[in-house]
Length: 75
Image (cartoon, rainbow, N blue to C red):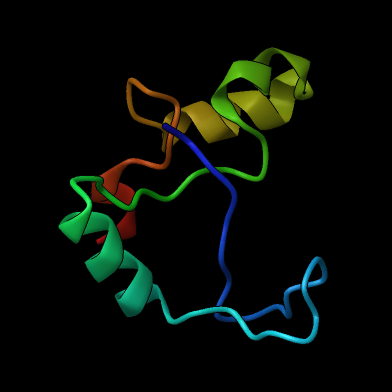
């Protein structure tokens, strides 16, 4: 399952009266629920074909087989 996002940098524009939870908190809750928190691009994997080919090629350089940001890139 690929969902929305959280950001330690930007405010939550959808729910501005509530701040984002910390990434550590979300990661812990995901693990407890049997999920793995993964980094994704600003576009969902199923919409990669809609991204400009030049940008898409750069994204694919750091994407994994699920078209999410590879764990190796984040290290």
